[in-house]
Image (cartoon, rainbow, N blue to C red):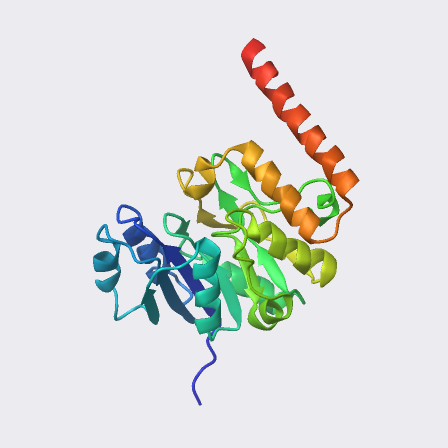
Length: 249
């Protein structure tokens, strides 16, 4: 009998020839080897596909075709996956050598549906704070390079909403935590799973746009529009306050 695949690692990429190879190498260098690696390319034309094909013998599934957005690519990867646990690693982000080993330890020891791993950005982010979800949605270290979910729980919560250009992860996590009441936790600060690319897609989106999409996510999930207007006002006020502090500090 074939051994069950423990992890399905999904990388979505488009025109990132400078970074994709290092991401691939960080996966192939894992000390824990029970995984499949799936790469979904959005029809790159900059040499990305050529780089990926260098590793075709070690990549389980590779698709290169046009997609709607990042979330559409992730959904394709999820549908192709056969592992017990799904993990998202976007191009440019890097796994540490023992990342899967650490994650496997948590799923083996604890009765959890999902796990957030510590991530190194400009500093180490590691806390998972679901109690704060009603006034902020960034309650976790990261989506890419941090988020593990059991495949049966992914099916239960559903796929990522491709109607969101940004923040579809917020939407999925809100459904996962509030509507489905799934159980999760985070690794310890020293148990870093990945290094996050600070120059990726999220770095090019303004906070104002993120706030707007956060309100769309909340509205979709049935939160009161008056509360959303008040919350949006507070976020804008805080953004203005922080700018003033930076100017005069």
